[in-house]
Length: 104
Image 1 (cartoon, rainbow, N blue to C red):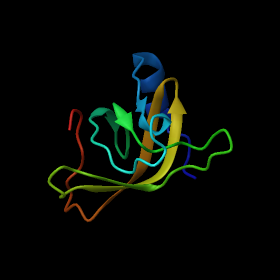
Image 2: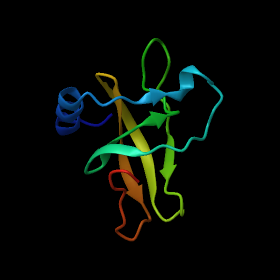
Image 3: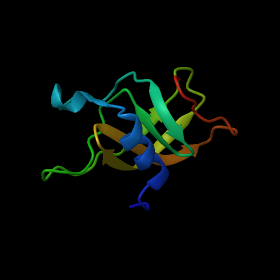
C-alpha cells in the first residue's frame, strides 16, 4: 500500500467532492466512463467509479483506467476514501509523458 495521499485527502475534505459508487448498483460492472474532478500528481478523483476501496470485508479492486483515445493508461495500486470521494492512486504506464487532466 502507498503512503497516505495527504494533499488529495485535504483537497477532498475541503471541497466536498463526491464520487458516485457504481459498484453499489452493479457488483459485476467492470467498465465505466467517468470524468476527473480533482487531480494531484498520480492521485485523482472521478465523478463516478467501479473501483471498490477496501472495507466491510471486501478487498480493494485493482485495474486500469484508460483515456478515451487509448493513449493514456493508469494502473490502480491503491484507493482511499476521503469524505464522499474515492481517491484513485497509481502509476501511468507507457504514456510517452502524457497524463490525465481535470475534466478529462
